[in-house]
Length: 117
Image (tube, rainbow, N blue to C red; front, side, top):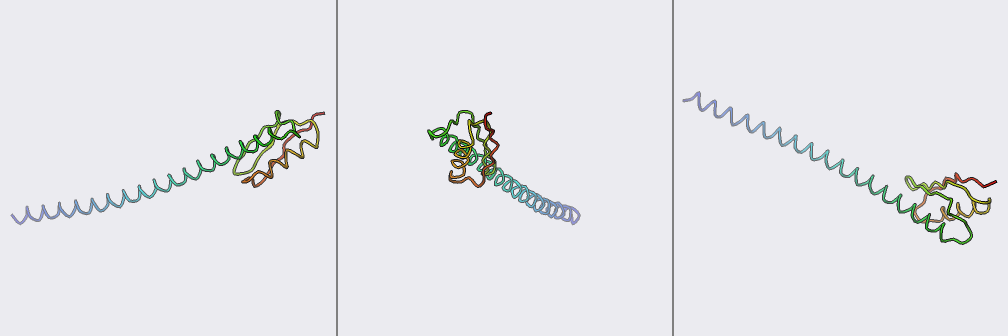
């Protein structure tokens, strides 16, 4: 009988230690999942913000009657705006840069525009 009680007690203690181990493992997995979710949210937020900046810059370029913006492509990565394409002259290139730089949220403008010859 003592043997059965000892066996039951050992089984119970093993179950408790297994549960503690399982609980710790679950806690670690939950922390990892939370971290990944936060990271995903930050990345998604950055991409959404970049897309918004691209739209704002392109809209401002198209709305400005001093410039022919149809051949200007706008891309944004980490709040850095890239202007690509062609413009008829240096003055329009300067205006495009100025519009992009003055857009709220833009931290830098990379002018990759080419002037038509």
